[in-house]
Length: 295
Ligand SMILES: NC(=O)c1ccc[n+]([C@@H]2O[C@H](COP(=O)([O-])OP(=O)(O)OC[C@H]3O[C@@H](n4cnc5c(N)ncnc54)[C@H](OP(=O)(O)O)[C@@H]3O)[C@@H](O)[C@H]2O)c1
Image (tube, rainbow, N blue to C red; front, side, top):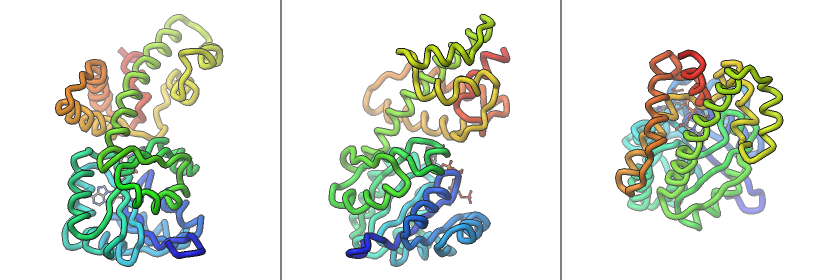
């Protein structure tokens, strides 16, 4: 961080649904941002819309940055932008920090943390919750794994696009926390789907039902924000079924190691596979109700 100004030279790799607006918040708050995206069109659009520059490789984006943020798809995507000759690590200066916002495995987080240490670099796994709207409005929840000293350096910068940035423990702890989040959401969305579908079949006024019960013990963010759109069969609200299945796969692998039983989560993963089979790969996760409404 530049002393006195609190502005940092940063890079952002991966300008997808999440990364594009997150990088935008960093630039809007005055940080010196260099972006990289695999498909150049998104990086070109980003530099037209924001103050900042673009690089032609992850390595060149990372050169000279105090903090490199990254948000790509899965473990393999992450390795492909971080490692190798043109990867982020090859460009980072000693002491710089990589903050990874991808939802990935705790294993890959520990692997990259180890490789970073070998090179005098720092790594923080920092998956997010809050979806596309959270990224666009700069109110994400960020769950971090890593060392306190690195966390203290990145937190004021990550605050630009976040409502809460919390250190959960050593490397991998952010990803483990995100797994808890995804397991909790999977069951909740299925329960909500069954409730909404039941209410519709009972010919109730669902707007009224949601208004009444969302104030009681069954209320949830999902009910308030997705209940009525689920009843209308609208599934165009960000977090895609493909991503959810990727996340649940990560949870199942971790559960095999730690011995946690996930019977309901396994069942819901099968329901999501059925949604994919109906062409719903990019539908949002509330589309579980589609199976009930259309069978
Ligand atoms: N969307 C949500 O609501 C949400 C919420 C919480 C967490 N997440 C997590 O955040 C991550 C990103 O999600 P998103 O919705 O932003 O995804 P997205 O819109 O599909 O964007 C993915 C980004 O990663 C890049 N990328 C993927 N594979 C790559 C590779 N092998 N090499 C280089 N770049 C690669 C893509 O580049 P191209 O443009 O070239 O394809 C794109 O910039 C995922 O791990 C997701 O699970 C998403």
